[in-house]
Length: 435
Image (cartoon, rainbow, N blue to C red; front, side, top):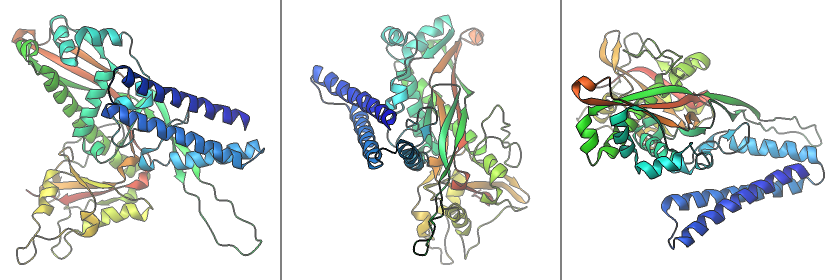
């Protein structure tokens, strides 16, 4: 009991110090907190409240230290590692792992405390990512991007990725392999007769292992453009982040799929295993459709397949928070009319869910359904973990394209994708999209 209280008080002191530092910095510069600092301050206050709540729980158990430690562990892991609201924890430390909704990557406690070697020197020397690339464009070489600029790239990618917009949990990784605690079995309740024995029913836990693999993206431009364009910094960041977002969407949905989805061939390794491959392996009942000639919508039950996918998640006691489909399937449903030519209204269960489009979901041929079969994903996307290894490195290729006066920029991203609770996902395969 005493040792656990000591650990909690150490966390309280840590959060109080962080809170004071934010306020003192702003006061010294005679300004209010920025939006990002205000969010960070709110996070610190939430952590403080959680620590004091833990102390109150411990005090309820008096001197029984073993019982207190066991119950507190169950309470905290049961509440935090289920992933609801993005509250996963690092198995090694018990600290919050995933970014909260609206939290920038750079504000996460692990990222905020991370510093690359010579980071301050690089920021002072170049000022921004574009200037660093300009400098490297004449000399070539590889540079680790300072954390502050890496965070900008990652946040830009989050805004462009369908799975991240849908709520995927971003988990900063401070090592090549990181274990994240999760809840695998819920406790149950039962009625009993007076004075009868209570049957124990504990939640069960294990962990998800994130193992960083490398994804690279190449941007090519003329030497003159990189040296002269005033907005090169923003354009390069946008190009790199868009490429990262698209590939992450593809890997998150189809990593491990080598056949049956058009030209997709994402063997694992090196690709991480995404949602569809994970369901095929551990929960094939959540993969619907895949008829020999695809599934066309039926006039009288036009949205039946969408509802089937949504409710497949709900049948597993999970609650989907968004749908993901491609533009052709979105167009198919947007153009649905009744027999009088009036647009069909979306069922309440469909209308109530956000719908995100990404053309990383392919259109393909399924039997006689030529180039319009596609897939629909429904999920609680907070249960999709995207591990993000902290440093992003930039490699500038000056010699490979020298004969055409161009420069290549390669950004190397490292991370992993893992569905935490497979029952939170369902896919309808080979459903008809628009031509």
